[in-house]
Length: 264
Image (cartoon, rainbow, N blue to C red; front, side, top):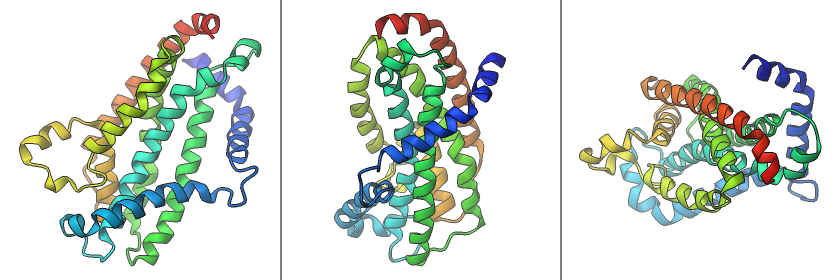
């Protein structure tokens, strides 16, 4: 573990430049540039709000704003997009960089770190834009919004640990990359993002609380929608799981490293 930290520190400039280059390369020929980071999730909000707003707006707890349902949606999507983007990037990273892994001598663990850094950068831009939108919608953020900055690295670490493990498996079994979007779609609808949690019968909520994604989505809802300081019990559980997943994934990654090169 010490060697891993030292190698990441030695390649810190490479990491920062790679994250910046990833950000620029996505919009190099785009006239709207980084605005596309915002348009995609906001288009989701508009679609869901248009279809479901009248049906569910009265059921959103803790907010009386006319645009309460849209605010609720944006809050949940902000958490979900970070989780899903980090996970998706980490699953694909080793296969996508097969040539570099086989031909260039560098710490390969930097690859998922770069992907995580790029995803977090995108999410921070989206978060900043959403704060402006919340002001426009008459829901100015309180100081509790700063708690989101504590949650971002926890979500990223949780998704990274799971993603690196699945990314290693994906090198040997390419079906993982194909199955993941389906699983994520199911998980999205099993998590109260589009619909409020209070419409779920209590007998099912005990199972919902076992969903780690529910824990951080609910944290975002409480902080952003209701301007509350939520309990950190669920957050600490997700953080502990994230640390465990990350350590396990790194062990699997290091042991599978030589075989990964041969397969790639």
